[in-house]
Length: 192
Image (tube, rainbow, N blue to C red):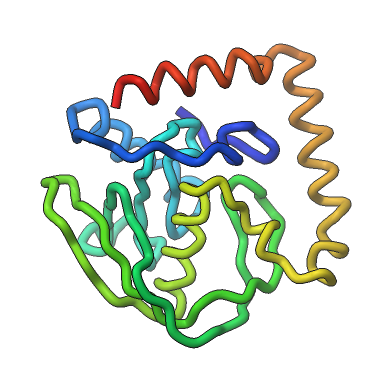
């Protein structure tokens, strides 16, 4: 398992709801946490590791020593939004790219934890930003889609570089062709 970079097709594919939580999902969660910390992130969605599931992990501190701040959520949804804030945001699937993104300041979310219990919480500021970013991933929405016109223009060359690098890796056989990726994702979805 590794973090996939734009324009990997899984990043644009809406994730499927998880119907059950098994050992495989629990193992994936552990590896996702490790990858998130290795990349110095605050959150990671399953599509970012080429898993087509509605699953995300977070630790808003970004500190692997603060295990009590680790959170795992299944099938999350935003049920209310309030206010707005604009702040710099990055993405582990776009390493090194940062831009200002406008997000809701406070959100109310519902999701299931790994015990299958429904959780509802209201979060603000950085935590709200992280939730919105990760839930966007589950819907095939990327932070480059949320950029304003000036930020998109400023990021254009970086985005093109990600596209060129992805194509180069496919040509070298380091990344499978899109059809193979699509078939693999479909097979994984049928297992949920």
